[in-house]
Image 1 (tube, one colour):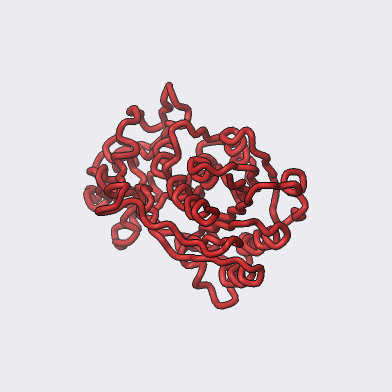
Image 2 (tube, rainbow, N blue to C red):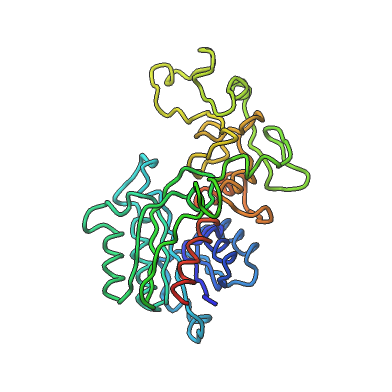
Length: 342
């Protein structure tokens, strides 16, 4: 058994995947109260530390780590927004840019057997003195062996075209990134699609909540946006609209074509964001129903199980889901640590 402490846990995507692979979730840590509530709901037997990692001493883990007898894994999937190309307001003063350094502080203090990091591609390109390069230098000094790469989530059964930067590290010798499980000729079969994950959910209207699942709830749409989505075919976008429905900015700008778009049943979604249930913020329109994705549908496209419950208001739940590591991806990477242990 490998025990896991999930730093920057959010709602628990990494923990969900690791648990599915047979790892034990010992504790989570996050600053967001709603995400903390979600984590506690879904991992009731785990410890949870709610607070800012920058304000915490490494001895905050003493109560459940000082007498550990099992191999230990620290997961540190810090918020990616400071480094994301989708963030037009990037700032060198963003305090979240130092979170990987704070994670390193805990690694140095506790020397876990294994380390897992997931973040946005591009983090590794931020100067030779950037946070990811400095983090790798720390791991080398501490004696870890590691591998890192940018990998597509769809390799691991996630129905999204997103790519992520990942790192796996070990004090127990060599460790390898997991090979793809899905794709032509692979054991998992073809890449999964939107249809595979959400087509069987009950129909609901914009602004409606399912009677059987509080998370199968869709945001309301204004009259104009209802007209827009009704004018949009499956997989289509604003190119199908009459001019009367176009925004002024779209009449002279052909970019950002995913905005106000519908998903296609038999393709992958684009990478889900923290606004993944907002029709006007990406290709987040349901393939055929006249509304944006529900919270449950967004969670399914991130590969959370149907039994997973989310806490907080509608926007908070969407933010948690958009920030999460897809559990199916985390599950695949858990097997790297199991192989390294064996």
